[in-house]
Each structure stands twice: as C-alpha cells, then as structure tokens.
Image 1 (cartoon, rainbow, N blue to C red):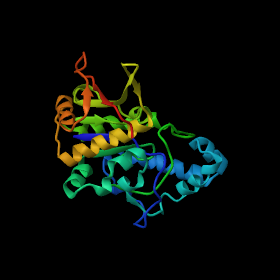
Image 2 (tube, rainbow, N blue to C red):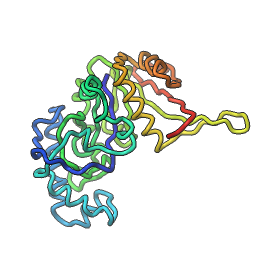
Image 3 (cartoon, one colour):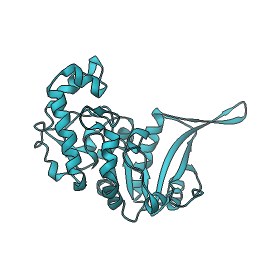
Length: 266
C-alpha cells in the first residue's frame, strides 16, 4: 500500500541535524527536477524579498519564510514526518505510533511537495515554503514541472499494490495515475451526515476532512492492514468502523472514488 499525502502549509522549524543531502532522498529519479527547483528557489529568495514574497504568495506577516528559503542548503534537517504539521499530521500522530506501525508508515507514506516533488516521511529535509501552486520565473508552474518527470518514478513506487490518494487537488495535479495503477488507486472524500427535520443532509467538509484522513491512515497503519486493491481497502475500513461508500468505476483504468461518511466532526 502506498499512501499519497499533501504537505502542510505550516511547518516545524528546521532541525539540528546535518544539512540537506539531496542525494539521500528517496525517489532518486526526481533528483534533477528537485535540484532545478531548489536552485531557483534559493536564488529567488536571495534577491528581491518583495518579489520573492509575491511569487510565493506570502503575506507581509510571512516575510520570514523568504529568509528560511535562503538557507535551504545550510539549515539543519529533520525527518519530513516531523517537518509537516497541521490538522492531518496531528491526527496521524506519527510520533505516537507503535514501532511496527512506524515501520509501516516509513514504507507506505509519501508526501507530495512543490519543492521536493515527493518524499517519504523518513527523508531528512529542512523547513521551507514553496507550495505546488507557485509559478517560478524560470521553471514556470511547479505542477507542470513535476508532471514532466513524475510518471515513471511514481509508477515504479506504486508497484503492484494499492495507491490510496489523499492529496488535495493542487498536489494531485503533479501526478495522475494511469492505466493499471489507476485501477488500483482510491481517492477519498469525507462527507458529514446530519439529520435536518428528519431528512439526512450531507455536506463536504474541509478542515475536518483533513483530520478524518489523518485518523483513517493512522488506523490502517496501527491495524497492520494490507489492502491490495480498492475493494480490499473498503473492507478494511469498514472493519475499522468507518462508513464507506463507493463502487468500482464504470470504466477500467480509472480510480475508485470513495466516500467516508461521518456523523460527528472533530
């Protein structure tokens, strides 16, 4: 099982570990594309700070994020699973998993990134600011930049197993599973079910969507579930107490779209 996660906008501070060793990151097929983004991002943030803020979409209050990017090659690093924070990662709680679940997480979880393309949670990276929606002056839109190199790398990473795609739309644009891999891919939407005047009403949730996805992944890792395809994923989630709806796609080679229905949001 390969689980694709979005990053978080907010990130923990860089660690006290050794500086970035780009060659040590997983998915080495992305190395050249990473180097290109890193080089331009550092150059951009070393120059005109106001221009850098504009390109990165940062408010005046986030001016310090530009300086953070200047130091990407020299700042300390920590595992990506510690760098990324926020609702999904709080609910996932990597640090509090038992040893076996942590080993599963290290193999299964892959975080998409505007700067790195995609990294495993154990990859050591510095804190940074660069979303997938950024359009760098030289490389252009990062989503398009990553699409040019991502397919063979991700197809190999997916192997023959399930791909659980929990990315937001901006990060999903960097790689879209195709063919047989798409047929083994499942996306998840979280719906909030409420009774209004005796009639069920459902709505898509945003903030709590992230929390539910974090708990869902944590529960799969803790249970040691190994679903091989979307149908087995549905069964595994139902065994864990989730209300899951979804059917095979009408055409082969398309991802399953699953709905997880919750009655409480927290």
